[in-house]
Image (cartoon, rainbow, N blue to C red; front, top):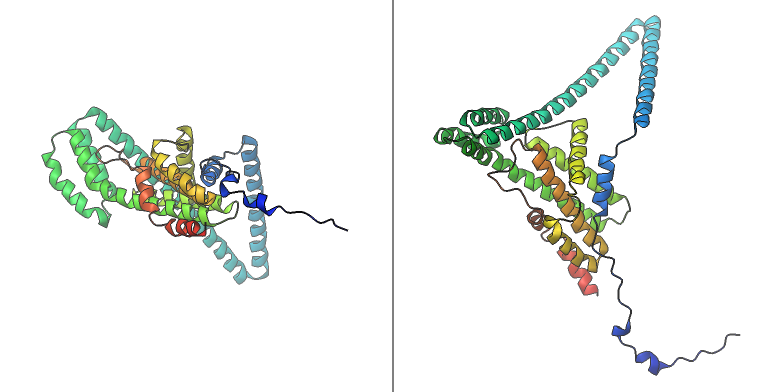
Length: 335
């Protein structure tokens, strides 16, 4: 039989909310989703794993080829009409694979063309001569001659280039007239990707969902940025570009806290006081914006000179305007 318990109401009522233990400080958000996406993007299998994949791929391809050969010859021996139908379908499948391979090769060619043009621009800036700069202008106009959104800029460049008498000024004019509109479109893609990653990280409670969304959102963003600058690539080219962007950021330590992320991380820390996931969303969005800026630098045929390099804090201020207002106000009322 339980014994009675004496409760001292006077002693209990003497305690105030200030006597409660403080809420543990979990620190600033770290952007775990983007760190996981970067780790997946730059993961490099060992030589033994690559060799094993090659051997297994060759074996499976050989087995499929032999099976298709036996299938077609068997049909031809039994019914020539069915055999020729199967032969035609196999030929059509091979043609489709060749077209896909050609598209991937063209994607790599476009990316290589941007790299070559950027190196040509850097050499022309170092020389500071009109002739190399004029050659760069011709190549830029050839690259964007079929872009309806750049016709006005190309016309202005063709009209004003004769008035510029130095190489550096001609390159600056080309950057402003041709790349200015593309930069605005690329910024819009970065803001959309940052908003998407931040929102999903803040709302979705699943453990790996934020990493998957961050990885695919960054891949889509990088692919669209490359296409804007004339480097439209296939699947393999996009994956290579994604690895290249993340490798550049990790090598330079750009995925860590820096001057252009202080404002975003501070905002993430304030939101983190209300909800840890909201703070992680802000930081993951800021890191996505930084990946987008790096993609612009790698895909842009001309380095930033006449036009300013986008800042992560400015991109985030436009991307997240009003996104978390409803969440934070409801959480505040709930408290």
